[in-house]
Image (tube, rainbow, N blue to C red):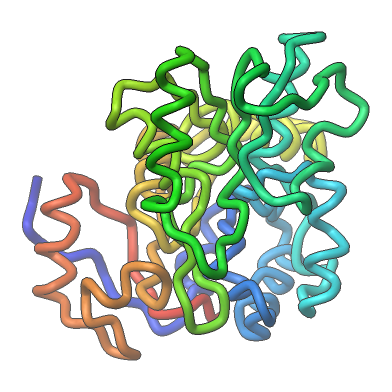
Length: 289
């Protein structure tokens, strides 16, 4: 793999004109969990105006129809995107394949729409047939360390865990909070079995591409698809597995690792991507038209 760093862009317009479909990460790219990023939303709106289809692809553990009001509330305009595909959508399909099996929901009550309309009776950890992890019970104050004993009890019972959000951390305002991926990683580390829905795994991308092609009424070659995100573990890895180009944003969760102010150092970026063994098509600080 070449040590040449990817180009640093001030504006996305010259790059995105070569694509028909954009698969855009949500948290850290178009909002920070508290407020929308107006320039990023405007960039997506301009991309759509120029004829491309923009699908937001999120590791949210909730189904897409419950995400839309959340985006509205923090100021992400609906004209910025054509649709939303979530890891919750993928998780619901997996849960539906296990009708009547009792579920221990490891996560906050706000994620209960994940189970709406499904034959998935909820149970406690001692009586469940498997686990669906959507996050920490209290991600404001807890860390994965608080779950050491619970995860061990689940492991002793040999319970399978469906991870409905593979993210390890996300930004909420200026803070980083732990997500379900951190608990699933900890579960696997002690020998538990975990299946991750969402990025970087292919089902969420296949679902998003199918939706884009249905909207456009035609097949879209992977060479005409661009993914955008701020995470190496989920976004860049997922784009690489799918075989599409990737635009990496330095202002997100890796900012502390790469010293990513408004003018990230090219040499530092080259080392960063060398260590990841994956190289994006281009790099920006934030998404700006």
